[in-house]
Length: 251
Ligand code: B12
Image 1 (cartoon, protein in one colour):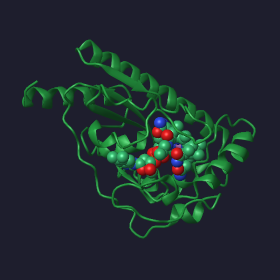
Image 2 (tube, helix red, strand yellow):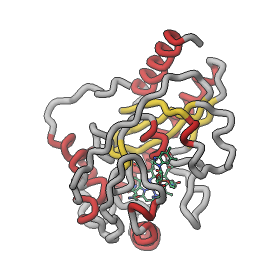
Image 3 (cartoon, helix red, strand yellow):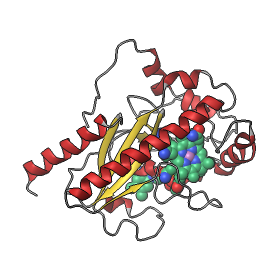
């Protein structure tokens, strides 16, 4: 596909994603992502691009979270996963109908519960696709919605135009470190990404708090928390806005 066609096709794919209910979409080259652990290990072999999709969670849900996840957050978490899985499924089918091999990666499927690994890290894909940076909370922080987004990925060999990563804007902020109920966040910054989860967090403390304590609360179905998401100023900034903002990255 020649350049102008590829530019138009990429814009069209992103527009359809936004029209299907996503807030943000971007494209990453799969080459640098091959350094990630994937399941299966050759997951990326047939794919040249990874399309990252983000759905924003309603801001008011976070206002109800104080020191543990709430049943409404649990429900919203499940709904966001369903919406993302449907968007990724439909996008993969659309790309396939256009002649491109495409695979939707589920929002929240865990393939290894011992070491907590999925098929591929959505955060790494989203970061490389320019949706945001990896914050001190280890999550993807978007300039528009902070970490109040859930993510999915579509792997494809469609010749989509690649987006560029954005700069980390955490600065000296330590709000997620100070609020973490597990004391898991170390408060270390990264210009690109952490080499391991443990560089950013006492990972076991986070997994134990969520898996052994929060997931056992009434009406909580998964290891969720929400506190490092709630306190991030980039998410709160959105909450205080009175007028809707256009999708800044136009993706
Ligand atoms: C297993 C899992 C968990 C486990 C383990 C968490 C973990 N940190 O790995 C537990 C149950 C503890 C957990 C907790 C949470 N999770 Co969780 N979890 C996942 C899941 C299913 C797989 C994660 C995985 O495979 N990690 C493997 C490691 C190695 O990858 P990583 O965590 O992304 O970290 C590395 C890469 O990002 C890499 N990287 C970043 N950029 C780049 C670029 C390149 C080129 C390379 C090579 C590497 C690289 O640097 C990191 C260190 O190596 C993902 C969904 C998915 N498929 O991604 C959701 C996911 C990460 N979870 C999510 C969320 C929101 C949470 C919680 C807030 C719970 C909640 N919903 O309330 C907490 C937050 C914990 C925290 N602060 O990290 C969201 C994050 C959204 C966001 N805005 O970032 C995800 C993406 C789910 C989704 N569909 O949106 N989770």
